[in-house]
Length: 453
Ligand SMILES: *Cc1c(COP(=O)(O)O)cnc(C)c1O
Image 1: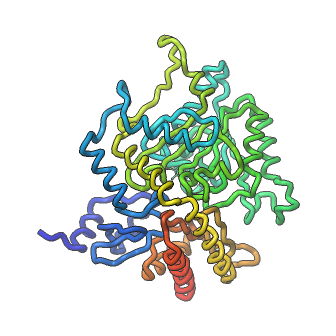
Image 2 (image 1 turned 90 degrees about the vertical axis):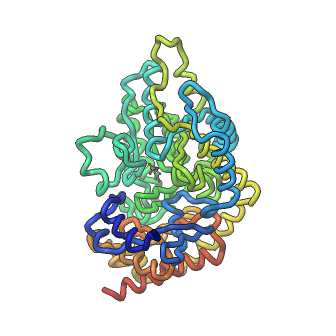
Image 3 (image 1 turned 120 degrees about the vertical axis):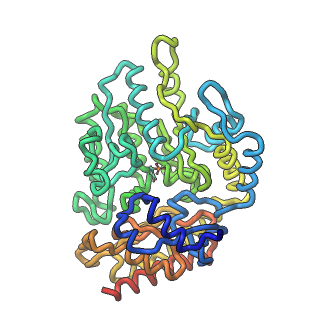
């Protein structure tokens, strides 16, 4: 039997519960069903093509169904699909760990594998806390994090999140954290207008919190340079460096969540490199496996690792592990992806696309409804506002972003907004023509959805 688009749509509505989706709205519409991918394009069950404007939730690097990655995957499947890291070592996870440490910021020397960004963060939090326990400071059990932070959707990673609309419902289940104001220059929490004269009030506020709570703090967690899910908020230059030096001053571990920014997105392999910062713990996922399979890694310094060594009976073991830890299929693809970075000189071509994007965004910023464009590497947010002068936002219930993206879909662009902010986050292998097409399609989407009222 040939399954038609309509059959699939019916079955989807009957049985699939989609993430971050009001299913009542979903049921009222006919979903686009993706059956194929080619380069940066998604192809649906009727043969329509859409440019993958969000790199399939920020994961895709070299394009879809890439021949070299496909081959790495099938070659590995022909050897072994999975064996455990609990009691055994695995060839691919060894090779990948060595490779990651090779490219990671200085000082990181150990790789702990898991399956997704949320778990990579949870591993980092548990590691940081247990490290302090082993050092004789079990009272250092709290974490400081930024307003609008996003670190994942499990209970622990939500606890260090700061997006009210996602996290408030679950607040009775979450552990309490200390929130520091976001370095959000468009809507500065301190009402400052000008970066040259603000004196980075956000860093001063952080210092006050650190000094007040330092005896209780295990670590500070931060998305370096770019707060993605919080609305593509781009930090001012020097902020991350300031955070690093404050953490040092107050004896607080710095956990960087590079789940979104890692693997070339910012124009360097890791965002931290822009500010010559080395974290104590670093969480990686999304781009790690080039969009192929769920894979994550938490990197740690030798100092942290050493604190966990001891006699068996001392119970200093890091008690954490997931069933599919270090999966060989995923590790083989991740290794091949790193080869492709070199073979294709990808970082250099990313830098060209970053320049191009910044030109395209400048034009977009002139449009009356565009309050602010924010770019960090090959990622950008285009914030739509009701009033450009007062920065008055659209009420979220108006679905301003969703309406613009729905129109853009008709122009062959798939993008998923963050509230009123449209997102540009293409696969890193995006061509010059495709990037033009993407930004133009979003622009058309804004125009058409604006006219509809
Ligand atoms: C997506 C994301 C996560 C969560 O990753 P999942 O794989 O969805 O669990 C964590 N941190 C950041 C910065 C992210 O962008």
